[in-house]
Amino acid sequence: MSTYKLVCPHCGGSLRIRTSVGQHIFLRTAYLQCCNEACGATYRGQFEITHEMSPSGMPNPGVQLPVAPVSIRRDAMRSDSDQQMDLLELEAV
Image 1 (spheres, one colour):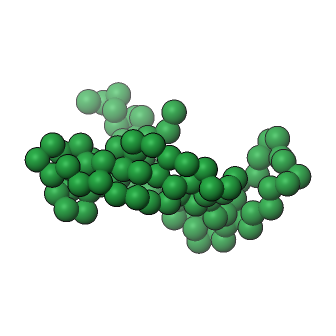
Image 2 (tube, one colour; image 1 turned 45 degrees about the horizontal axis):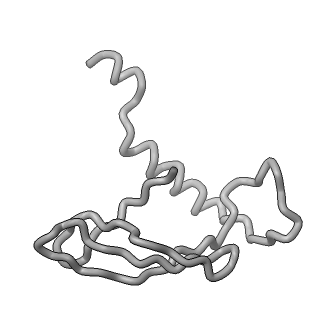
Image 3 (cartoon, one colour; image 1 turned 135 degrees about the vertical axis):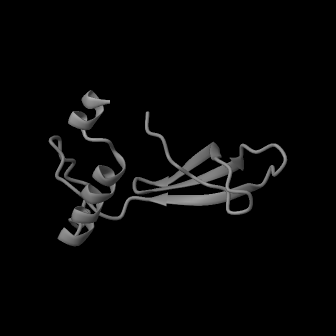
């Protein structure tokens, strides 16, 4: 199961998805709640699949998404590696 890092714009606390509804294959509407009990804000948001980062090993002929530009794919790879410790550094600790 995937974990999303959603942050409350009011208090900075974590948000959790209470429920969501599929609008179509590429779009879900989510209802969110702040986990900070003192805040308690609730929100509605949407998650949209906009580009394909890498091809599927089981392609569905009905799915037609543009391939993400190289700059977006490069940024996605860079953001993951910048925040994760190197395996060799972890062994030295």
